[in-house]
Length: 298
Image (tube, rainbow, N blue to C red):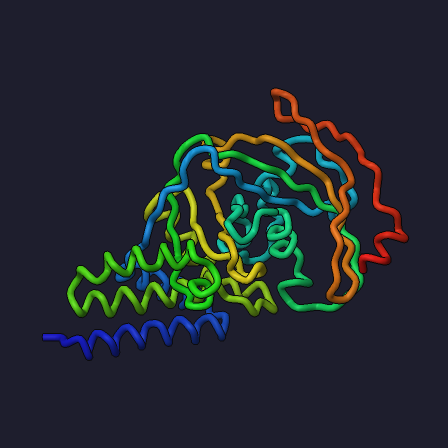
């Protein structure tokens, strides 16, 4: 008969093996181990209500102008997705977005931090990048997995602390053995969803495998996890593409330019978008901030 000590050793062994496979980029082994992890770990679920605002952005890398919702929604050229993301495999497209919180009202700032590698990799460079930001509103309740057990995230965000306390109270109703397993696995999973030091897309492999398998196993609408770039002050959300089409309503768009010099950044408005009934976007260009004013701000 296995004791708590035996199970504690087994869980530690599994989590250590996942970390080693991640470090060695052993994807075949990682796939097997993540499947095993999800057979023993619960998946906390919360609901996102109707009429919640979500925002995402798409960088205008080639200077192109986007003219429809489809242009700024999830990527449809999935065959050109060559890298792992926080919640996706290569050649797998997801709808990434962010939510506002009591700490962060301007979701656009979070999206800029999340979608520019310079911030993820702490690069100090000079850069100008045009990007397009879109807003959607939930028109149905979303059922999403949530991973709020990172200690730093709990410290910086009261909402994340509320979610972690709520699920810890549920876990405390289980046996000593189950409590030990659930707390260890959920903290481990939350660590990888909050992994901050991203130097290569392979750093995302653990959370990417977890996400793809969670979607397959539980058929949830999405996964909610703390935003790393904004010091955990709000949540990021990743949705299955079909959910974004059926449970979100596109409301508006705007175009901006990120001007980055060293550690200083300015975001300048370029145009406001109006949409028609077919979700085509028509741009009204605004007066730009002068280079002299931008220089003073930087």
